[in-house]
Amino acid sequence: MNEIPVVSLADIEAARTALEGVAVLTPMEESRWLSALAGGPVGLKCENLQRTGSFKIRGAYLRIARLSEEERANGVVAASAGNHAQGVALAAQLLGTRSTVFMPEGAPIPKERATRAYGADVVFHGKYIDQALIAAKEFSEKTGAVLIHPFDHEDIVAGQGTAGLEILEQAPDVRTILVPAGGGGLVAGIGTAVKALRPDVRVVAVQAEGAAAIPASLAQGVPVPLEDMTTMADGIAVGCPGAVPFQAIQHFVDDVLTVSEESLSRALLALVERAKMVVEPAGAAAVAAMLDHPDAFETPAVAVLSGGNIDPLLLGKVIRHGMAADSRYLNLRVCIPDVPGGLAKLLGELAAAQANVLEVAHERISPSLHLDEVEVHLQLETRGEPHAESLLARLRERGYTVYE
View 1 (cartoon, rainbow, N blue to C red):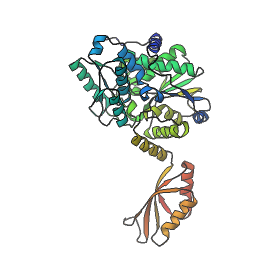
View 2: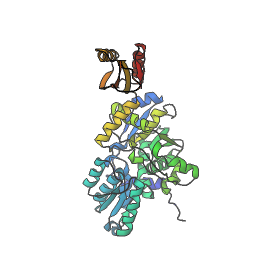
View 3: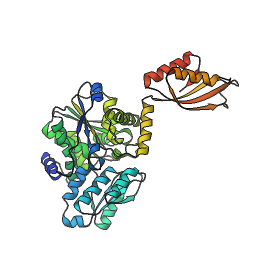
View 4: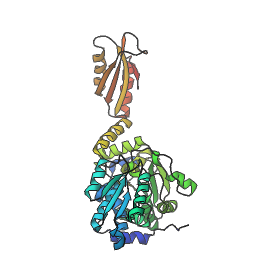
């Protein structure tokens, strides 16, 4: 059996030197609204503002920079839903080598376009990143192009770990660091760096519920692939953690939490509204965990915003989903008398309750309705859960039959 490489603090410090002038020192932004919820200082490590829009350039550049001239002459190949793709494409461009990237079908359009703009050839293959990775390995064997794995290599983990060094310098009093996790490269690198310098800091990996391979793998003691995945967080939709990062996760990650699609939507919406930060669903995972468990983390805490590459159409959908999850969209069915003025009276009650009507439709033919009734389908905008509850109570107090 091949021995799994171990990444050390010295490896991460050497990676930082190699990345000077390539990866930018991303800001650490204070988050007053998260601080108020958590009961202490919370910072946002803004890797969504990194070159290519995510942390991935750190590991990708280091890996390609350490290839020999002969290896670079054959080009590089990668598999990615978009963030690693852009990191590899830019790194290859900077280092003067060809790049080919296999993307899962349905990868976000902005990520595909940006990857092509950095000079990479893009090939779509499979539904998930794991299937694209198989195709990338076959391409590597056929052409001699070097496979730049998205997370399962010591150089990738060391490169991502440089973000951990920055966090400790930017937030020297930090007690908890929350990191979005898919294949595990970022949280493994950050965990390795942080535990070497500050073993008292709690490192928490956060996964999407529908793509959470790390908890089962930790329970088995080896990486265990998922049979299926369903999540909008494509950046962390990985069916199995890599052997190299998994080894570090076992030693240096204290907890693994999962967050729902609703929590991811709420977190993304809150980051747009409160922090003025555009992130992708995967990039919002750490904040989602804080919103789900505001009292669970010792402060000062840092939530890593791992990426900001999101399709504007998806952003609109996720914002609407987040508003619905926060009860700021309310869908109702209300029975009213089928008489002149019946709808106007209902709309008057909604106006008095300061609810904004987005859509309204009539349903006249239904076995559940009496002949003198009509059902009105409403989509309303409210100010949140308390307002929605008071609105429902108001309608029922006035005799309306309301179905949510």
